[in-house]
Amino acid sequence: MLDLWLLPEAIADVEGALAWYGRQEPGLDEIFEAVLEDKLIQIRERPRAFPVVLGRVRRALLARFPYGVFYFEDGQRIAVVACLHTARDPRAWKRGGAGR
Image 1 (tube, rainbow, N blue to C red):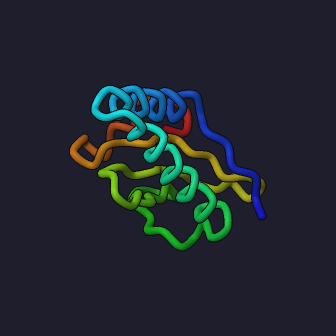
Image 2 (tube, one colour):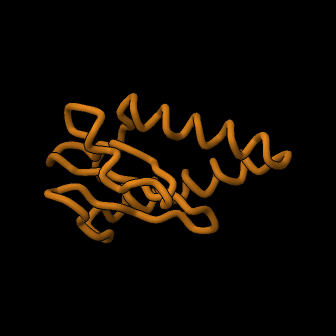
């Protein structure tokens, strides 16, 4: 099984989502975090199970929340480049620079 790591931009995406959900309803941020963690485990266990959206970048949609996790594998690890709301332009992850 490959190691999985989140790029700083993806961490910022997740922190923003957690903050937003935390303001909406008490505990909703914790539910979002648990759903995201489950998806990251699925990605790590079966990285090729999710569709390619551009080049070698794949997208895994979260259950219950309108977010997608964008990632790629480089043979030694899985790099999560973004965690974006599905209403956002899916090409937004490309604007962040290296790997994005």
